[in-house]
Image (cartoon, rainbow, N blue to C red):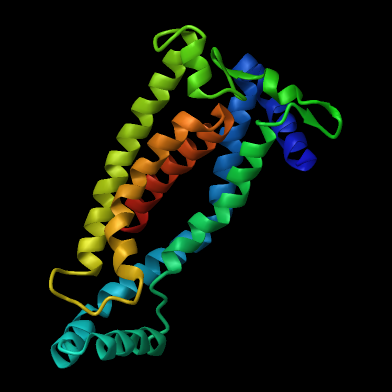
Length: 235
């Protein structure tokens, strides 16, 4: 935890001449960008895997015709096909899972009043008028919806809503392409994930309202990066 705090503080010190009181917020955005760069090779591999799964659809359609009346046999045949072609149906989840430790570390860092027995100085930093360690409910209680901190959150909500909408459209388009209507032969457990995945873009909108602002910045930046990244990788 102290390592992450030190890293954020060093980034903030470097960015202070440009962003002044919001330097720590800018440091979190920079940290998020670095994390996304680190997992970018996995995102590229995920995109290749998605295209490989699309290429399997004609074979899956044939299996559906052959074993359509026997769901258990069909699922087994689809799993065998994925294994034979060395295509993982869940590879696309890995980049997101690897980012979770950083998010939870930021959540914990900006929720603690002390670090190593000393006062957590990061809690004194703000994004414009909104403290990085506070939540939306705190902003509502201090100035209301249109108070200085409330306006910061309204701006974040607007940004997240736009990103979530584009992310939703991307996910729907990708899912429809990779699993055409009537194709059948879903990998066990993957069908529910496929149906829920397009709506995961809106999870960030809810999260921003309940986590510390620092963690919300991480989520918003990561979501925006992910949407832009998918637009490039799946074009």
